[in-house]
Amino acid sequence: MTAASGKVAAFLRRYQPPTDGRGRPGGALGGPITFMFNPNQLTLTKSASWITHIVRGAEEVGIPEFTGSGPRTLSLEVFLDVTDTHARTVQQRVDELLTCLVPTAPSIRAKAPSPPWVKFAWGQFQTVSFYAYVSSVNASYTLFGASGTPLRATCSLTLTEISGNVPGQNPTSGSRSARRVHRAVDGDSLALLAHREYGDPTVWRVIAEANDIDDPMRLRAGTELLLPATDELPARG
Image (cartoon, rainbow, N blue to C red; front, side):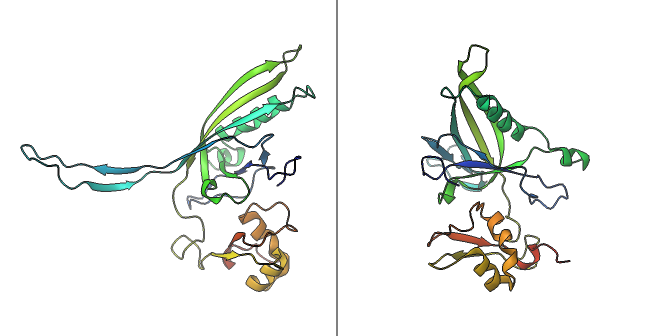
């Protein structure tokens, strides 16, 4: 996805939360929420929990005991500005971000209410791209039109990693075959990879969705692609 300036634009994609208890998201919900301006700063945090054993009367503390790793959290700011057009885009985009905190209609009908899962994406920066839930949205409106329409806002987002195996990553994650990673080379295309991996070039969309690829014609050499397992392919009629 490319911004108007020619730079790769950051975006947030929403996914249907799981309703079957298997811990894997459904399909994408609507289109991606594309940022008007790329973030100036990203804060990635991960913690580990340890218990320090203190013995009364001992001169030194005991060996600490590791109890587990905490989820990653990603904090970022989204800047919105339509002072040149005076459009309602700021209000609409903030409303889109707020939907990330509200249970989806299908999850409510399934009696498993949950807001959507999300994934932040920005070009090849894979470290900050993981399934997460939005734990907070804080919107500060700083400029308004004569009619009260917000023209400028800064939204602070906090994304918290949803831990657990991504579906199909290994044989114990609910998939009968494992996903694997392929590094693209010159001449690769999604259709060629689909033919090589699954014997059917028409299922290239499965690879595109797994990697948040919006333009299948632009496959840069060196890009690491996650190839879904064969049992994740759509059923053929």
